[in-house]
Image 1 (cartoon, helix red, strand yellow):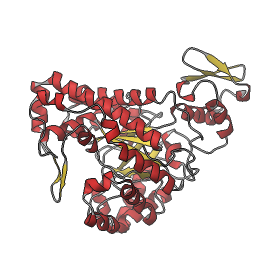
Image 2 (cartoon, rainbow, N blue to C red):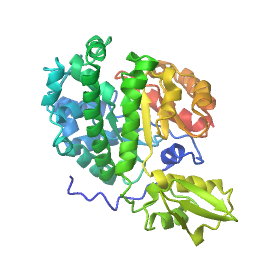
Image 3 (cartoon, rainbow, N blue to C red):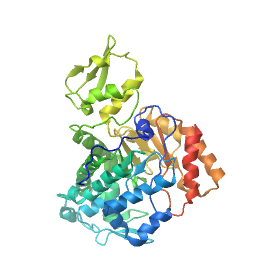
Length: 426
C-alpha cells in the first residue's frame, strides 16, 4: 500500500455524483464520461509517447496525472475515474497481456484448456495490484476534493472472455464454446475471478475510491438466459461480497455534506457500524435504527417519521460506498439487473430512458447514455441531443454519461459542449 495515508483526505467540495447515486436532491445533473482520461486528449498522447500503456497504469504518479488531465480541461465534470485497465486482473493472476497499437490488448498465451485454470495465481493477486491502490490514494490527495474519485473493475464474464479469446473479439466464439462444452469449468473460473474482484474493489475503497463501477462490457454476447447464469449471479456476488467485507470499516467523514450530516455522523460513531443498519422504524414520532438483530434508539433522532431527507441520508450512511453496474448490451435484462443490489445501473445508448425507468423503478439511479458517435456531430446538434437525453431521464436519480467509452478521435470541444449542456438542461 501507499506510504501516503489514505485518511485526512481533503474535504469533498462537489458531491453531486454521490447524492445522485443515493437518490438525494441535486442542484444540477452530475456528469462524467467513461474513458474521459484517454486518447482523445493531446496531453495523454504526450505521456503515451514516452511510456507504454501498462507502464502508465503501473506507475502511480503517471496514472494520477492522466486521471487529473480531463478535470483541468472540463470544469463541468462532476467526477474523476482512476486511470487503469480492466485487464490488470488477468495480469495479476499471472497471464501476460500486451497492448498493441491499432490492435488493442493481446494475450500471447490465452487459456486453451480448462486445466489451465489451475495455473492461475490467485494467491497474492491483490498485493500485485497494490499500484492501483497507490494511484487512487495519490489521486485523492492531488484532486484536493474537487470531485469524487471512481474506482472500477471488469466483471468476471468480460475478463474471462479476454483470457480465452486472447484479446478483443467480435464473436466470442471460443468463449461460447467453453460455455457449451465446459460449463463447470467456466463457473470455476468465474468464481475465482469474483473472489479476486471483491478483494480488489475493497482494496480500492481502502485506498480512497468513493464510488465503484463494475464493467460487464461483453454482456452483449449473452442472451437473457445466459446473462442470468454466467453474468448476473456473479455480479450479485460481487455486490454482496464488497458490502460484507466493508461492514467492519468506518469512515472519518460523511460522504455528503447536507443538513443531516450531524445526525448521520452520530450514527456512524455508534457501537454498531452504520453499514449493518438494515432499516428505519418510526413509532410515536421516534425513529429507531434497525440493526441486524438489535434495535438501538437514538434520542437525537426523534424526528417526524416522514422525514424523507433524513431517511435518505441515513440510507447513504448504511451503504457508504455506492456501486454501479454497467452491462453493455444487456438492456434485455434490466429487470434482472435491478435485483442485483447496485445503487446505479449504467445504460448503453440502445436503451430508452423512459422504458428503463419503468423497468427498474424509482429506487435505483440510472446512468448514461448518449451514443459516443454523437460527439462527432456539430456543437448545436450535440447540445440538442444532450438536452433531450437529460430531459428524458429527469433530474431524480440520474447521472449523465455516454452509452460507452469516448472514442479516440472525439473532438475536444465536443466534451465541453456535452458536459455544459448536461448542467444547463434542467
